[in-house]
Length: 214
Ligand SMILES: C[S@@+](CC[C@H](N)C(=O)[O-])C[C@H]1O[C@@H](n2cnc3c(N)ncnc32)[C@H](O)[C@@H]1O
Image 1 (cartoon, rainbow, N blue to C red):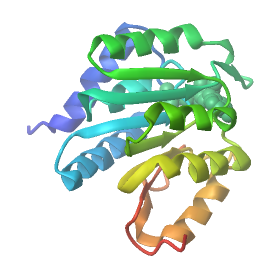
Image 2 (tube, rainbow, N blue to C red):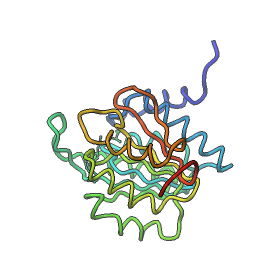
Image 3 (tube, helix red, strand yellow):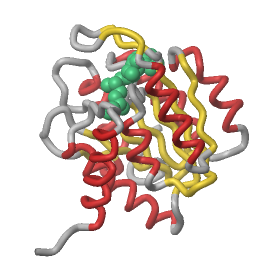
Image 4 (cartoon, protein in one colour):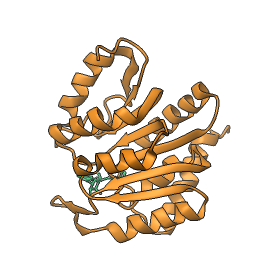
């Protein structure tokens, strides 16, 4: 039986998260899609990723999983409200997110958590990354049309041509991300592709490729 090194890497990291009690809200199918897209990005760039920004980290699980593709010493930024208000998850989870940021710092990353609303933090994040061009942006914060559009329109300004944006919940009918995802697919053509029809679904946009009408 041949084992796939990438899925083995993901499995080991998920075990570690479970052991350390960091809850991951992203299912394995979407994570595997993200892992393949990030591996492709790294091949295209011809190097490990220099940095990443994540909007919506919750406990920091996806931040940790995706950090696999970022070289040590690289910049890892998380933007998170620090609390959830939905019916399933309520209350302050910022202690966990901070703990993950400290762990990543200990691993040699230039990791930073911006606690608050992504809409109010854009300038602060831009000042923090300064002249760095971001390789990868993961959008998984507010799941309403307005917020996800704000996050995409603003934070992609920090991502370089050839960089990658992943958006979670592109097939989730319980939120309005699918509507915005439809717009991105029309705008970016082949450069916007997804994990398929699975729920909640991950979408990817390769910036600077395909028939972007921007
Ligand atoms: C679905 S969870 C993220 C899950 C995480 N990526 C994972 O897969 O484990 C969404 C997170 O986004 C944060 N959030 C919601 N709206 C936000 C906003 N406007 N700005 C920043 N963070 C936000 C919430 O506090 C929550 O931690």
